[in-house]
Image (cartoon, rainbow, N blue to C red; front, side):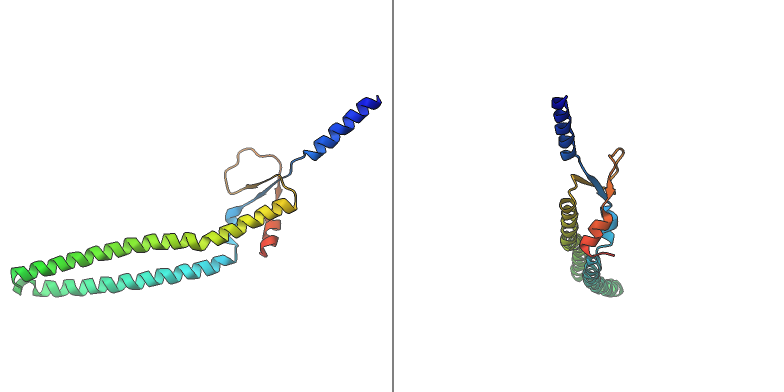
Length: 164
């Protein structure tokens, strides 16, 4: 009897030691509340405005050149007309290339600007997990069909990040 009580006690201690603690956080909701997003948005707006101004200037130059060409085309010698058409075509190509480059640069910068925000959020979630001895913290923004009972750690993470 005494031996079976010791075995049961050891099993209970073992089960208690292996108890797993689960938590969840909605990273999309948390991300939208990150205070750094205002700075990121301001930087993105500034970059977009710079490209808008550049593209608008290029477009205006192209339109002026095109109108000038259209007004004078009937009186131009054939060689001059070809030179002007090639120049217009070249301007149009530069405009398209600049637009594509701008789109790529804006996307690259968005990733660069958001990387520290994502890293800070991930670090806070990891720290909350370690501080509160969570075995797993899941992202509730992802589709989960079956999950064990878990704690909502969003308030703890927001507190860690200084978000009210």
